[in-house]
Length: 251
Ligand code: 9D3
Image 1 (cartoon, rainbow, N blue to C red):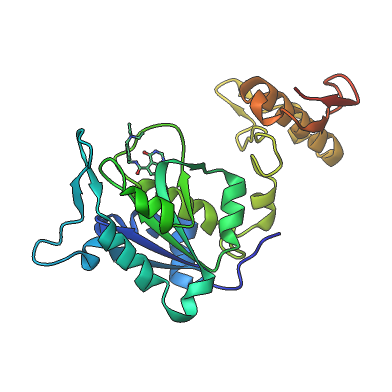
Image 2 (image 1 turned 180 degrees about the vertical axis):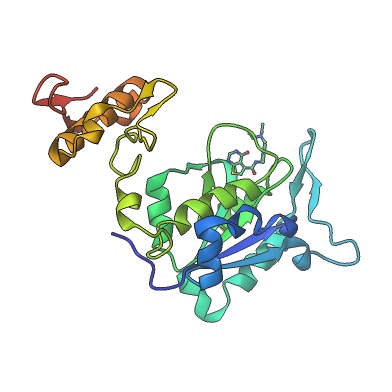
């Protein structure tokens, strides 16, 4: 499994540095930042733009509505952030709606990187030369339109951060989760055993651990089949006992 050398660092390049750490300051990720299990360095793109106006955007060649990020501030920023000893251990990612779709697998990959620069686009995007010649890759967090890459950067950092050893208390809870095992999670219940007439499945109160494990596996499989059959496609999943067939080639 990929694991970072130590203390992975994220560098965020944005025109809205005040948005950070934002949600990253809370919960297990907030704790991890405090404890130094990961580092966050937020940089203002305008610091690399020319005075006196420090303009980072301009109209697009060829016409059309909207502005794009000019190349100079981004090229200077990345050149600065890739200096010296940092050069070989730094991965530069552009957040862009046309990028590679982010998922748990991409997160695992990034968790193995010592230093990741996340460039947040705004407006209609960035000058094409930034994409073509500057960044290592482009990532999108899904097929919907956001006003910029800042929330995507936060989504990526939160997802990657909890994969860092020590960030999430119980390692089992990271592994047994949706997607990593290829299935959605089974439902969970806590006290009271009966709430307003709604009872917790009896088997969970039985203390029979093997039966409980089988019940959970079956519930996870059925929930996945119903809600997200795309997650099963192309995989050979041992069908849990009671759902018919010893083995099923999902299609
Ligand atoms: C019609 C052209 N638009 C592409 C869908 C232009 C455009 C819209 C919004 C270009 C950039 C943006 C700002 N969005 C991001 O920078 C972004 C994003 C997103 O909007 N959705 C999902 N993932 C991401 S990552 C960065």
